[in-house]
Image 1: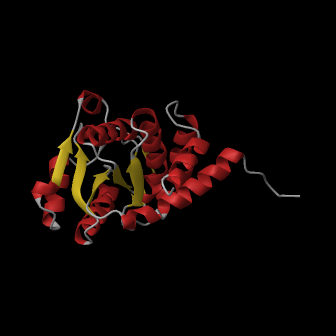
Image 2: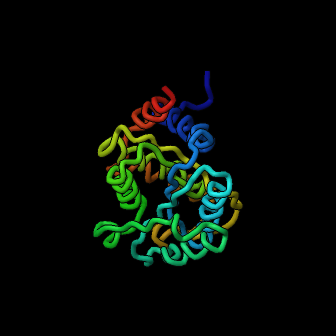
Image 3: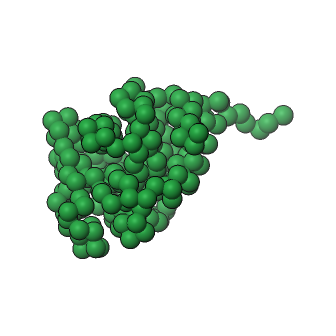
Length: 214
């Protein structure tokens, strides 16, 4: 008899996390668009460095950054653009987006909605969403939920930011949560996936991810 049991939803989440943490589709997307999700200052550099890597490898040619209130602790959008430019990405390849919803409340959901709606308006058929590794699962769940509701033909792929120390204590979630990154994943990110009313069922997300390969 098993020592413990995992629900069907928990098993789906494990598979989703494995897929988005090593999304094979990313390497098959030459000259696509990357959406760089904002993080707190102690984690955001990992996202920007991954964006630079996509630029250097010819995978991404456009980089979308959401411009909302910085009260939640993310570096200002202009500063993120300057850092990307310092790393070698031309300003001409950076796209700043915003809307009233983002300006009123800048969080994972409003950022996902802004990015997916921008993709739909521009006619993009695919794109890469980059977030810090401990935030990647919730980002993917949120983005796929918006895609399924608003632009189901869009193919979203996911990529972790460059490496960060799992045992480093950092600030997250609008500045109200502090802990080591692995603790934030266990205690905050997974709780958000389970409890946020906008979250799609893991089975729907997994079905969407698998369908991209067909």
